[in-house]
Length: 119
Length: 108
Image (cartoon, rainbow over all chains, first blue to last red; front, side):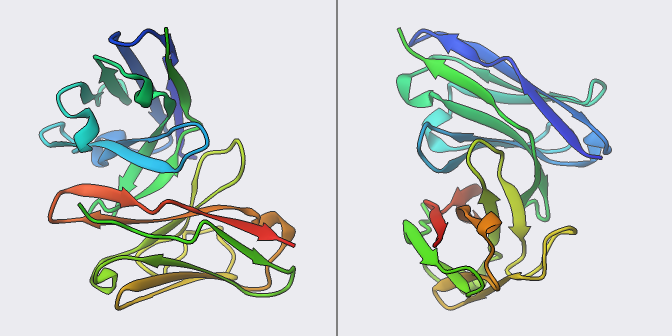
């Protein structure tokens, strides 16, 4: 059974940093693109970042470029999102998702970890 | 960047058919994917590549895509189908994965 378990969320001040993690199990992690998708309170889904199987390619939504870094450790079956220079508008539930197809869609999702940026 | 437009809400009586649209410029040339999200839960993929269903998704869920509109159709709607539904595409011109704004399905 595919499982994605996020951790590391919490309360952080504007301008601060936070790293969220995702532990994957039940599939061959190194064979899949992986993604982060977020959802602000009461709002819709927003794709944040993707990373290729070997980490050689990464893509970001424009609003986080230069501030967020997606990475992975295939030996640990883990995905990470390092978030720097956090803003109030980054407040959201952050979901880890497995990317499938081109990759062009997300076939499995974690339960999410909440990040709140506030003073 | 590529924009997907969904109606904010759709209402349907139990047993009837619900249709949720997703509009985008020449969306018929892209593969469209649909997600269901119930309150407090993670999204679940219900249709991918316009009209394919993941294992475990009832046949009542179907999709179509042509021209500037993609449609998620839910037949014989049940109370348990009440949720937010999101369409999504990959925009190759920007290498961005794009979601629609979401549609709240209410079962009357």
